[in-house]
Image 1 (cartoon, one colour):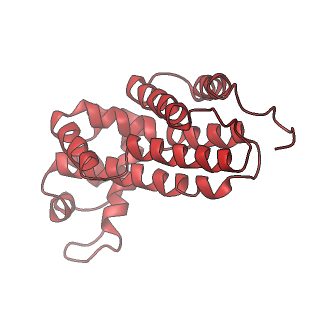
Image 2: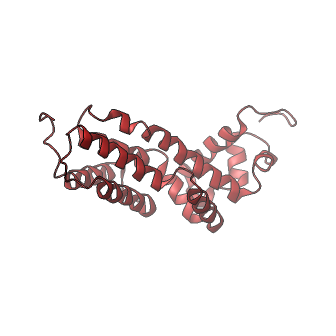
Image 3: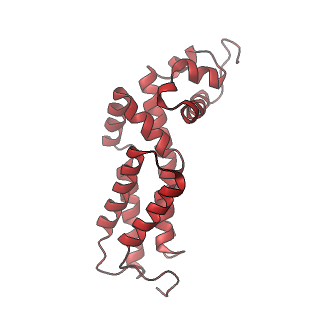
Amino acid sequence: MAPRGVAIPDARERLFAAAERVLAREGPAGLTNRAVSEEAECAKGLLYRHFSDLDDFVAQLVLDRFELVAAELRSLPARAGRGDVRENLSGAALALLDRYGPGMAAVAVSRNGVAERVRHAWAGGAAGPDTVEAVMARYLEAEQRLGRIAEDADCAMIALALAGTVHHLLMRGGAEPADRQELVRRLVATLTGTLPVPGAPA
């Protein structure tokens, strides 16, 4: 444990990483100040030096992890014209489902104060489900301009359906990663029925 009074570099990230381990091991109910502090090997007061209360800490954790995934997804439109469209879309959806998403969604809805703060932040422009939808739509539109998607394909609706399903899977939880991957790939194949066959010329 760090000595009292000694500053801990990157204290926020240290606490966030500890919270993720507690969450994975004990679920949302186990996410307490004591559990996080012990996991991070720091004094219990550290959390309250950086966050107003536990709900604030958990909300910031959720928002931070969604932002990390969103940062990865923002490069998707730049990949237009490369690789297979279906695989690119599936990979973007699974990036949210396979990393921080399920655990973060579970802890967000487990605490009313957290859910309210997260919704307020999303409404204010923080990275969330709307970000995923917008990135997917821009990617599809870019592919459409390149002729790799049919001209009459409704890119906005494809993005809405895929992002909405991802959000549903996050909120529902429970499914095994392999099951989520299969579902997402089947959904992408269904939604993109108007797209060229993988490997065919653009």
